[in-house]
Each structure stands twice: as structure tokens, then as C-alpha cells.
Amino acid sequence: MENSQADSSLFEFQYDEELKNSLQGAANWAGMAALISFASSILGMVNFFVQRAKMQAIYRQYTEYGISEPSMGGGLISAMISFVIGVLLFVFLLKFSKKTKQGLETNETYLISEGLSGLSVYFRIIGIVLIIAIIFILLGLLAIIGQS
Amino acid sequence: MDTQQEHSLFDMQMDDSSQQSLLSVSKWAKFIAVSGIIIGAIALIFALAYGPQIIQVFTTMLKIGVSQEEAGMLIGVLVVVVLLICGWLYFLLRSASLLNRGLESRSSALLAEGFRSMRVYFVISFIISLLSIISVITEMI
Image (cartoon, rainbow over all chains, first blue to last red; front, side):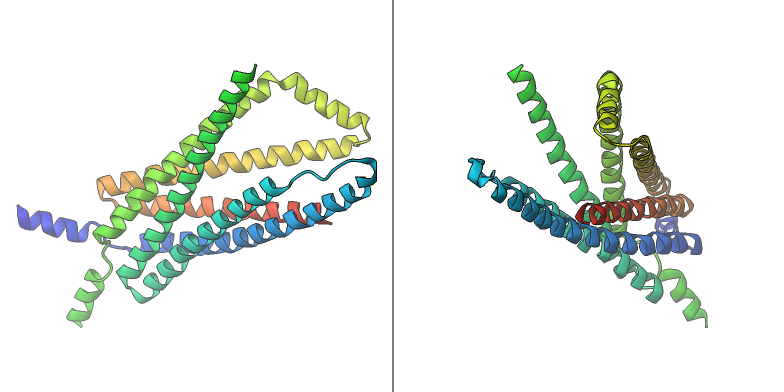
């Protein structure tokens, strides 16, 4: 009984050709998605500074009419947080892509295992960010209800 | 020769650590997809409840010089984005469910199907990021 169970647990999760191919496909697209999303994060950061410079130039024109420039510190903090999250997601998704592809090429299961742990961290980060966002949305709604 | 065959049979088995990671992927992906669907449903309810005001915003835009083609394009882009997000969440949920079922029933065929769904999820993520880059470049120019 014990032997058959041990045999079954050894053979049930073989990386067969079908599983290898689908994992390879997911890893390939994950790598491309990681790179383009990283480019998008960098461009988003650059765009933040470009738009801020444009706004500062506009406000500078109106200073003589007594209109002061509003603080843009909050915007910078949220842009930095988005950028850091973007970089973290890029690192772990790229880890999944690279390690999994290496593991499939060299038949090294520990590399695939490392890749899958990267994918697990990637989804965990998104989940935690989502939980924090939901908490902020709920707090905002409570504040609006409290005011009215 | 026999040793080589045995080696190729044994060296590509999914270890416990990989199974734990996949279980975690499945749980978090399900949470993200379900939360996204709930948030989307709430947004849809708000959009339906404030439908007249939204139409008024578009009417105002038409009055302030936004042409009908531009307003139509804006609606078209919104529809494409909503469809992409729906597909994105659907494939994420499908992938999470298949991976979980694959792990529970110890079926590599279900795991393979789960990774195929995940590939579609990454393809849609790629398209969304590409659209985001195009939108940022347009804003900068």
C-alpha cells in the first residue's frame, strides 16, 4: 500500500511534454509582459516629471496674479510607489520566465521550482497591493459618507 | 542506455516546493480575479446608476469642441479596455481554477491547461502595457 502510494506520488507529477510546452509558452509570454510593463513603468515616471514641469511652467506665468503653485509632493510619492511596485513585479516575473525556461532546457527541476516561486511572489505582490487599494477605497467611501 | 532512460523519467518530476508555489499562485490569482470582478461589477452598477450624468459629460464634451468622431473614438477605446480587462480576469480565474484542480486531482493535463490560460493572461497583460505606453507617449507629445 505504502509502496504504491510512493510510486504514485513519484509518477503523478511528471513534467510530460504537454505540461512542458504549456509552461514554456507561459514563461515566454511572461518574459515579454515583464519587459514591456517595466518599460511602461519607466515611461510613466518620465511622464510624471514632464507633466510636472509643464504644470510648474504654467503656474510660473500666473504668479504675478497671486496664484501660488500647489504642492506636488503627494503626486511624487504615489508615482514613486507605483514605480517601486512596477520594478518588483518586473523582477519576479522575469525570474519566473528566465528560471523556468532554463529549467526546461536543462531538465533541472530546481530551476523550475525557483521560477514558480518567483511567479508565486509576483501574484502575492499584486494581491497585497489590491488589498491595500481596497482598504483605501473603503476608507475614502466612509469619509465621503461621513461628510454627507 | 537504460540508465539514461531512467534518468529522463526521474529528473523531471515536480517537487513539493513547486507544488506549494503553484498552490500559492492558484490562491492569489483566484483572489485577484474575484476581487477584480467584484470591483468591476460595482463600477458597472455606478455607471448604470449615474448613466444620465455620464451622457451629460459626453454632451458637454461635444459642446466644448470635441468632435463626434473624437467622442466616438473615446467610447471605442473605453469598450476595448473594458473587454481586455474582462478577458484578463476571465483567463486569470480560469488559470487559477485549473491549476488548483490539477494539483488536487494530480493531473498534469489540467496543469498544462492552466498554464495555457496563464499564457493568454500574459498576452493580454502585454497588450494592456503596450496600450499604456502608447497612451503615455501620446500624452507627452
